[in-house]
Structure formats: C-alpha cells, structure tokens
Length: 78
Image (tube, rainbow, N blue to C red; front, top):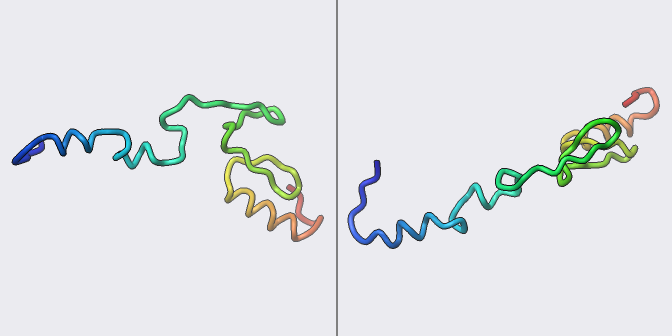
C-alpha cells in the first residue's frame, strides 16, 4: 500500500522504464535468450568468454581461473 499526498504526476513518471534499475542492467532479463551451440553445449550468445588457451567459458571468473591455471604450465590440465 502506498500513501501519497499531492499530485500523482511525479509518481506516474517514476513508472517509466528509464527510471527502472532492473531495465538498466546489462542482462537478458527483458529479452529472449539466444543460445549458441559450442563444442556440444549451449551457451548464451552475449555471455561467451574465451580463455588464453581458446576454451569457451560462461563467465569472466572462469576466464581468470582458467588463465591462472594455464599460466602454471602443462602440469595442470583443463
């Protein structure tokens, strides 16, 4: 329940998408997914990252971890 005193015009303006924190995020929350098949698995088109070794991963964190492991040499296999 919302109580407001005064003109509702300002409140109506705040309902527009340009005032939405969720709409401002760079996610696929408001658009259809676009999966792409890579090496037998599906990954979201805009969320494909590549490691130095050429492995496709889903997140920047995975890139960092994979690149650190790769820099340790051949004794660690990915």
